[in-house]
Every structure is written in C-alpha cells, then in structure tokens.
Image (cartoon, rainbow, N blue to C red):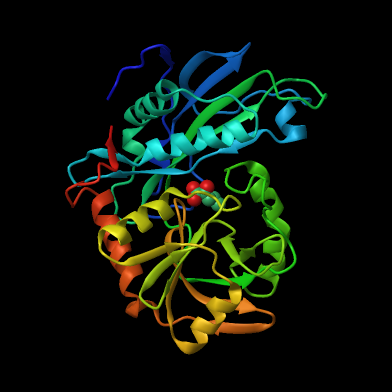
Length: 355
Ligand code: COI
C-alpha cells in the first residue's frame, strides 16, 4: 500500500474501544459503527487536514450549506476478511472514481487518491479487528462529503468535509424481495443527477417507497421520467434480468453506475453469456415473466449484494418469478463473488485491494 505522499494523516487512536461489546452473530445493517473515522477538511480551494480520530459526533453550523441546498454525496464499499486474517476491500478504486464524478456534478471538489484510497487503507488497518470473519458478513464502508460553509446564499459551498465511517454488517436483505413498478413518481430525468450517488436521490425515494411498503412490497422499481415505460433501478440497488439466454441491465445516465452491477456484467461477459446494457420496458419484463423467458431477476448493489426478486407488482397485478434454486446465473455469480471476496479464489481480475 502506498504511503500518503502529499497529505500527512494525523492519527488519534481511541482510548475506549467498543469492539468487545459487538455481537458479531447479530449484525443489523448500519447500526454499529467502528472505533475510528477519517475526517478531511477542504477550505480555500485545497484539502487542509486529514485525521483518523475516534468515531463521534461532529459540530456543524445551522446555516451549513448542505442542510439547505443539498451538496451531499456518498459511497458504499465493503471489506472482507480472509480465513488467514487478511483484510481485503472490494474494488474501492471504482467507488473513488464514481465519488469524484458525483462531486463534479454537484460542483464539489474532487477527493485525491491519497486521501480517499490511502486514507481508507489506513483507517481499515487501525480498525481491522472490526472486519467480521464470518461468511455473509463484511465491513460496510461509507465515505461521504458535504458542503460546510455557513451561508444561506445559493452558491457552491466554499468548504467541505470528507468523512469515512465503517461498521460491521450482515445482509441488507435476508430474503428475496418484492418490487412494485412505480408509474407515477420519478427518481431521475435526463440531464439530472440520477447517475450520481447524492443524498437527495435517496430522500426522494422515501415517500413512494413507503406507499409501496403499505401495499406489501419491499421496494419500488423506478421507471423513466418521460413515459414511465422503461425500467431504471430499484430503490436501493441496480437491476439485472436474464431474458432468454441474455443477461440484461438497464442503462443510461438516469441510473446509478453501480460497481456491483458492473462487476456482474463483466463476469457474465467473461463467462461467455450474451450481455446487453439497454432499455428494458416494463411490458417486456411482464410478458417475459408470463411466457417464461424471464428466468432470473435480481437487485445488485454493495449493500444488497445480489438479492433475488421474487415478485413484481404492476398496475394492480402480481407476477411471480421462478423459484430461486433454479436461477443458474445469479446463483453462480453470487457464489463466485463470495469465494473471491473471502479469498478462496485466485483474484485474476485484481479486484481485491489488500490492506
Ligand atoms: C450501497 O449499496 O452501498 C448503498 O449505498 C445503498 C444504500 C441504500 C444502502
């Protein structure tokens, strides 16, 4: 791992580790946070200070710009522990790249490699005992950045905080999920911020998701803003389908450019499956479920990993997907990724970033 070249990282280790209080057999997503966090401050056009400090509250101004005008972006990454204790982060370079694309769209500064990648490595080195060893668990990593300028005028914030927090997690979804096709509310339109991982994309999903939950669905399936005809993504992850013998994922700038989705499509290509990144209409999906050509459907994301879809609700009708056991591609990719991430397979793609 490279030493930080231009930014010296101050480290203040905790005097009160909470590690012994953690029940690693009962991990709820996002409820337990590790001992340390990385905090970097940007001001006057440059990153000034980078520190690893005990996890804890931070002080902000009530007029802080992110609270009012929403300059707030984040990432989701996971780290795993091999049987020999090695800690490995899965493709963090891709998240770093996406983070800076989100930053550019929201007129925020880029975070340099030495802060994002080397800082992450150093943080995980200090908190390596927080990475769960049990298969099915991992350390969830949440890098995020927000505008901190205390000013109510609408302009890009002049100052920012970049923070990385982490915490041990189990599965985000513990069983296959049902999705309601959303044909009224909109997540993203062409030219908007759909591809980026900004906080507002999640805020706007909460109300329609609650309506879907009230109708008995776990999540929503977003459709395009113009016609509500084409499938975009689920509320918390991208979507991938097997239609006939082709692995297909919706594509475009209104859709989050997921690292898990990209990984799965790369594997499908490598393994000789036909792949397509294209528009998929809701009608094509429903017709395919009815005729039996849609044999697999799953959500793909860092938190969700690969979550099978069991049922899709569209215009008051429910359509059930085939049983999970027979889903050849998604089960194969899930097993392969598990073995790779826990260090049981040779890393021929260079996706494991060892700490
Ligand atoms: C992730 O998959 O890491 C995300 O950020 C999604 C979030 C809904 C948990």
